[in-house]
Amino acid sequence: MYKIFDTVDEVSRYTAQRLLTKIKAAPTAVLGLATGSTMEPVYAQMLQDLQHTPIDVSQLTTFNLDEYIGLSAQHPQSYNYYMCQHLFNQLNIPTENVHLPDGLASNIDTACQAYSNAIEAKGGLDLQLLGIGSNGHIGFNEPHTSFNSRTHIVELSEQTRIDNGRFFNDQNEVPTHAITMGIQDILNAKEIILVATGSNKSAIIAQLFASAIDEALPASALKQHKNLTIVLDRDAAALLPEPALQNAISTLTA
Ligand code: GLP
Image (cartoon, rainbow, N blue to C red):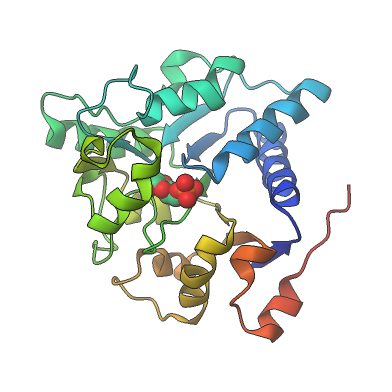
């Protein structure tokens, strides 16, 4: 299902509400979380909504999608740092319930296996939040990643390193490798919300819309999922065919 809103603000309000509704209904939910600039207003909105209407988040469990290899949790560009800044520092989720891949693990293969196992041991993800890379990656699953993949090491594509270079002082500082949840881990989530905003996502969103399920386009794996919502602003949706656009235009009721 596509949902298209006029503005980033509406996209964020809708997505934050979906997350909070889930948490309210299931206080022990297991959430799969994402990073990236798309999620910043979503998390900000969530925190704002929680100030108005507090909800118990103390029983939640979270698993983040990915992390750069070689960056410590204190590195300002690590995803661990991002999550603390944008969400965790202001929520009382017990630290032992918060999970991110460890980019400094001494045995990364073992750590990857343990990460997928830990998700399964918790009964799987109830809801996975996703952004999308300009080359169609989800998490850090680059084009041609197997749809059966579990948490694994990735060599980042040049495109991804260039896209993410904007967060670093120097392009050479962008890590070459990362750990990501696999596509199978993501597909196992009971519910998935993919969010894309801005005109820089319009081409990949149009490609995703038109694409068959194909490992060349990682996000196309989501088309086989039974409970997927793709939430877009008008800019990200701009290249969708007109009938699809008209059908998916949504307005916030609240
Ligand atoms: C990164 C992350 C992805 C994210 C993507 C899009 O590469 N690994 O999980 O979806 O970037 O990020 P942004 O929202 O900044 O465009």
